[in-house]
Length: 193
Image (cartoon, rainbow, N blue to C red; front, side, top):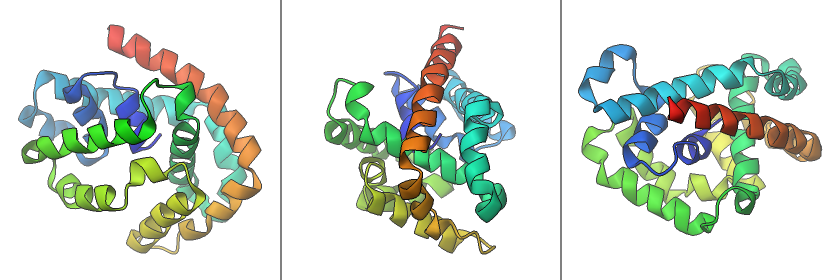
């Protein structure tokens, strides 16, 4: 799962959202810098990633991409799944996606002083190009993939991956829907602990 899903799955707590959002940018040794609730969000992020990486449905999605994209298949599927969450947002949240995303951008900006340096650097680009909202569109996914391909030290071909998203749109969408029900249940159980 990617940024939109990590924020959404955190529920209503801003600190949980922050932790879940920054989970890829922190190590266990960094956790002393954050509050207990942000640390819970970081741990939630890591738990979501582990659950996702080991799930058979997600493996099916990745297997479709692995011949061309190798180990980048997992990163691509994470972004594809955010595409389906954004595209079908009304099935998951009562608030309009535009309003929800704007609120999350404002919330993250208001906590800029505690965000990791890489996130501080990335956040203006995310907001300027409206990543969270534009995940729902093919051209939004294409822009994100192109940016990731440019930052990759290898020829990842991620900039081409919107072709597979279009070609197998129904298949990836079905896999997302089946998986996301289980992921939501997993996250609800995590939050209850």
